[in-house]
Image 1 (cartoon, one colour):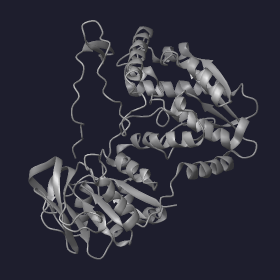
Image 2 (image 1 turned 60 degrees about the vertical axis):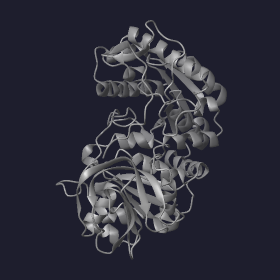
Image 3 (image 1 turned 90 degrees about the vertical axis):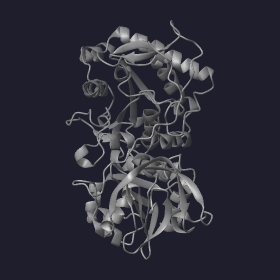
Image 4 (image 1 turned 120 degrees about the vertical axis):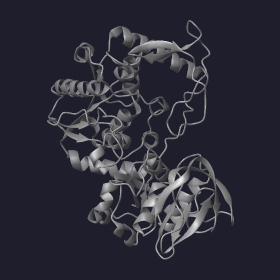
Length: 480
């Protein structure tokens, strides 16, 4: 199987790079830039190509992300994006300097050669790209030639004369670079020689074999079924691997959406045909969350209590349960990484990752750990799950507790359930529920029903207050 290694230099777009590569049916993994200092790791990964991401630093700063210069000598194709290109120049004897004017937002790039990354482009084509940089390279480093320029960047693209090492000073992975997909495809297929062999069917076959080998012929597993896409697909995949040796437990922690428990009981028993046990632990969870306002502490307490409830439920399952199935996704793993593991800051601790106790009584099975959400949906469809399951909107595992700012109370939970139900009703009525954006963000919806005072509800200081509806505007792009 083809493998692309993405070294994260701190960009908030790094996951998007990975998604674009996966969308091309090529497998890739994100690792912190520090892994690029370990040539043994890079060689053992055996990548068909390496991508150096963007980042917020300047390459000439102390402590800026870097990689071993010998990466450029391995014969493996390397693509530097934004900061990644500046890093290649820096490691190759070139110089990046602060620009007199930042280039941020849409920019026009002039293509100087229609080959390599720009194969298929018209000669001297002028294309729109998304730029985000405050430094520039005035001239290419020794051995490189200029492949693209812009008004503020004499070197907006470059290519080594003899090695498969290239870079662009803009972001081909974002939608605001209309022909960015062509650039990435040129790198993956023409330069790296990848074949599109990362498919849902391939993943399912590979994962079923891995699960069977892990669990063995007699082992039993228990799965926490939340009603969401991730746990449903994880359960279906493990069920296909080990059959009725999987028992699913649905924990009603009192933090669910309106009618969710009833929907889960009906849907999963009807469609999945699994052994489903429902545990009502509302009082236990609310007691643990009493007067807790910090979201990280909420996640930790919910994660620990969840495992306690699981231990009790597992004790009533026939046979010896040795494995716990979780719907951990690839973004869960990436976003839970400590800053010491790479330049990107921890976004949040996921209850599936950082909230677990170190002394779990089971071994973990995380069959979706390498997948993004859109890939999970594709796998779910391949497994034959109905659209009412695979098409559900994302919902946090810790439930409404995380969507309440401040302490959790039954009154606030009931109010948020009402708000959430109205929101879902409105987007369904508008025909927008199944038309989420490609990047997973929910669409802005102008309300048809207005609350008292003519405004929509919004959380504030732990509760909900009326504020004017948000005006739609251009997408926010982080700057780096």
